Image 1 (cartoon, rainbow, N blue to C red):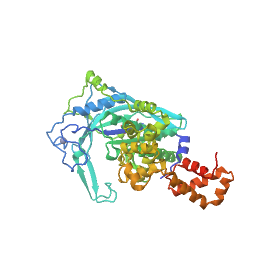
Image 2 (cartoon, helix red, strand yellow):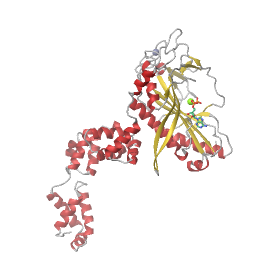
Image 3 (spheres, helix red, strand yellow):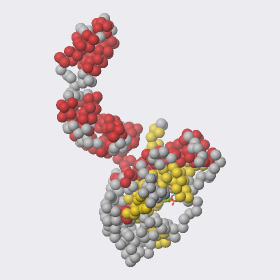
Image 4 (tube, rainbow, N blue to C red):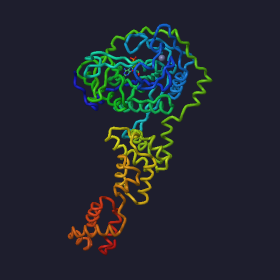
Length: 502
Ligand code: ADP
Ligand code: MG
Ligand code: ZN
């Protein structure tokens, strides 16, 4: 194996071309060609019937809701919706596919020629890339194999394999980009931004739950490198990358690997590859040097799909606000910059921030807590920030406590900690942990006297006119009150105590 070249060096010598194929499992109640339910996590092989098991004599019927969803997806991605197209049989044998062919689309996809603009944050401000979309087509998912008895869960080394056909026949939409050029060093983040934007659009359309961890959104990342001005290089295709972060890492590591291969005089092989989360590198899968012949032919058991223009227009009217337009609108309403907006998106907290604001929390506070403390805690616990057990009402109450001077920002963090630990409402946590700001002058003066007594030299300095020295005493009081005092107030009381006016 050749040594990868550090990313910046690779980009200094080569231009990357990327291409993304995204599979989205639709959230229809029933499968693509039969009435079997699609619920995730059911007992293996309980959601099957003669159609999705491919039993002889069974006949498929297309799911109208799935066709509706794919047309809406196509429209949201600025595609043309064709007037007439057919499903095709893609013939191959694999045990996860009971029919020995997959019903898909080949040369007649239902949606073509679209695009999606994605924005990425750069040092010079936000930059927009138009990702052109080649096709959006309809197909059906395969079953799921579980390889048992081996150490890795892969087929290699396994004693036997189990097959679950519950997933076989669930509607899948495949979205394929045209090759994306001109992204340079931004290629990995453009790839990630594209998949993120796509996910947000699917969510806004309500067509899929787009959970990458459950496989309802899967991405294959194609990457090639070439010298500027020369023909494009051979691509590799990293399969089933299953998180947004991994999309970025997989593209990055492929650029580093291919640069290593090319600079050592080697040749990039056209193949599929697997990305490993733990090591952050890809390893070879199956060679694609010789195109497989799937003997595609039009599916004879299904009628062609010919969406009327009236239906397409009706569906166009159901499109939600595009996520990019929504972000622009919210940024303006909240008075924040594109950069701040991007930070919220990157942290995955845009929706919760919007909900908090709707619940009455101020935009500044909602952003501060969700993108700051709460994200930090979620990362620490390895959970989604939305899974934390804090409500918008809790945040609103904590903000009220800060505004009324009962607690300060620092104490608020402890209140959050208590709420997240299930210690009750913010008020209950403040009471049980004794977190209220000490505002009682008597208690503060006692703490000040104590600090002055402990540091007589500092006290002397202040008395002698060195007001800057007051900081040491204020610090000591903050410490003895465990941060539960208002520093400005302590300072004022201290100077008053020493008879100094500023
Ligand atoms: P396959 O069936 O081999 O996966 P597809 O046409 O479905 O082929 O997808 C190929 C993907 O690779 C598309 O997104 C396409 O834009 C992209 N692609 C094609 N050529 C290159 C290249 N030289 N470098 C990077 N990506 C490429
Ligand atoms: Mg492919
Ligand atoms: Zn079925």
